[in-house]
Amino acid sequence: MPASDVPIEPISAYLPAEDIRTEPAKLPEVSEVDVVRHYTRLSTLNYHPDRSMYPLGSCTIKHNPKVNEDMAALFGFSRLHPMQQDETCQGSLQLLYELSKDLAEIAGLDGVTLQPAAGAHGELTGLMVMRAYHESRGHPRRTVIIPDSAHGTNPASVSLVGYETVQIPTNVKGLVDTKLLAEVINEETAAFMLTNPNTLGLFESEIRTIAEIVHDSGALLYMDGANMNAILGLTRPGDMGFDVVHFNLHKTFSTPHGGGGPGAGPVAVRENLVDFLPTPMPVRDGDVYRFEYDRPNSIGRIRSFGSSFGMMVRAYAYIRANGPDGLRQVSENAILNANYIMRRLENYYPRTVLVHGSQEETPIPTEVPCQHEFVASATRFRKHGIRMLDIAKRLLDYGFYAPTIYFPLIVPEAAMIEPTETESLESIDRFIDAMIAIAEEAENDPDLVRNAPHSTPVSRLDEARAAHPKTLNLKYDAMAK
Image (cartoon, rainbow, N blue to C red; front, top):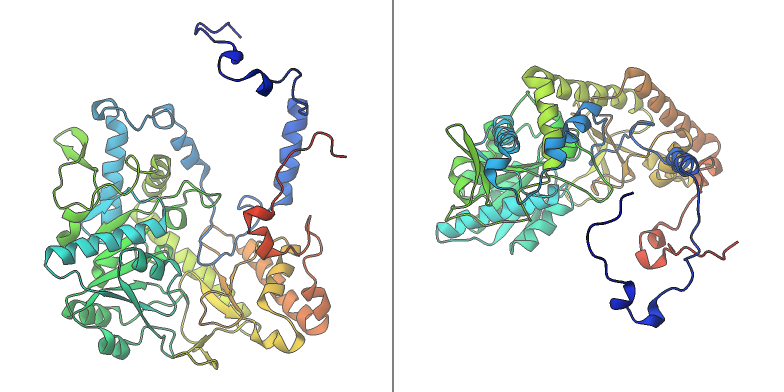
């Protein structure tokens, strides 16, 4: 390497002599090939979407097309600086502007912010926009209604914005009880937050009635967009009556998921709420694109810079590659795959729900189809001392990542299963065969299931301690043997 042309002061100019090493640190020295082999071996010890199916449920994890990664890695995108002047990054601003328009069309709404850094951050942003709207009308209101099947982030976001949560129970069909909604909603209700399809994987068939009840009270209707994967090209939140919806780009538009970020949770709103969206907003003046900051009614910036830009590139590439017909096929395939699994497993893992706070399970009618996911119950195995946790652990031995378990809370011994649209019939059949085999093991050899997994690098961990950072020892000890 050439010598640096920047004058470098000796380290002694910055640190006292007692803090300066006199001998090199005893760090391991290994070749490149050893490092590559080490991390390749480690990658095979874990599950990832390129290795096997992730039937995860509420947090959709599907294949991310590699072309999306290529687009995000283009030099003009990957080397973009967030503080560049607008005139130096017109292509990137055009992408943000066009993505906003695409998402607005998909949502059937009028304006979009790309700023939120995750789905829960999108919820918070949407609620802040709705509160600003109510405050502009002289009455901020006091409460937000949510169903008992709601994602856990919903009531958390409600509290952060300063509202109180009012929870209503699910009816015997696993849907919103519209009569109860009409009873509890009043002039102090700011919004009703709803996921559609809901977390049981069921489409809220009375959504038009729900929207009328909410709007007649002067409240707003918010859609948690976690399950947009089921409605692309089939219907739009705005057409159902929703005023605000957030997108999870990683769930619906195949951007990377997990690992602590980066995330993206854009929010779309109806026309009467557009003025309250965060700044800056990408806009177009003729053939010129720019960020607009002068928005007097805006709730202001809700994160640093404009967005998680790399996620926007990936989502834009996915939407443009599929087009309207392709996006519709995404949802149709996701629904077909989920219903296929549900029908083949319903005699082993039936769909049930706890209604109105009861501890007695009510079967969901078998003729009711699911959408892109469904929630199965394992209560039939309790007599053998088997819980859904045991079944999820045993599934690891069969080469599949476990689905979301024990959510929603209104389904006892729950497993939320979502194959997504990217899985082949062969991989889905392998998953079904594994679930049936485990059901038979639970009946005939319960100890085998209770003590699973047996083939993973580590067996059962103390999950409570493992989740606590103070119990992890990440220190490298050169003298350790």
